[in-house]
Image (cartoon, rainbow, N blue to C red; front, side, top):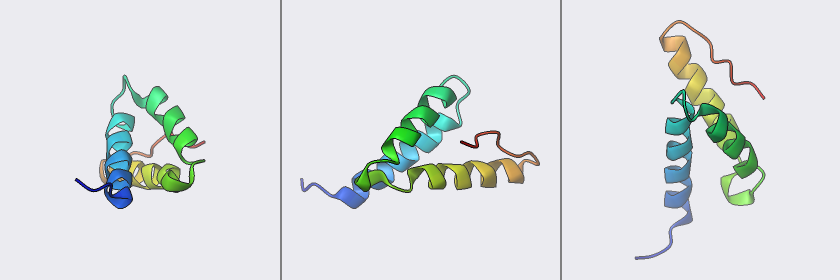
Length: 68
């Protein structure tokens, strides 16, 4: 099995997005997303999670409160 950075990046983004959607994990996951965003391999994860959370919440008629 080869190490594929793009696949790892996609899986990490999806994993933390799923955690951010869970009430019990949201605070931890958001703090971790902000840490990961500082690393070159995961740069952009914060923006990705925000966009996905806002897209999900706008479909249900409410805005996400995750904003820092």
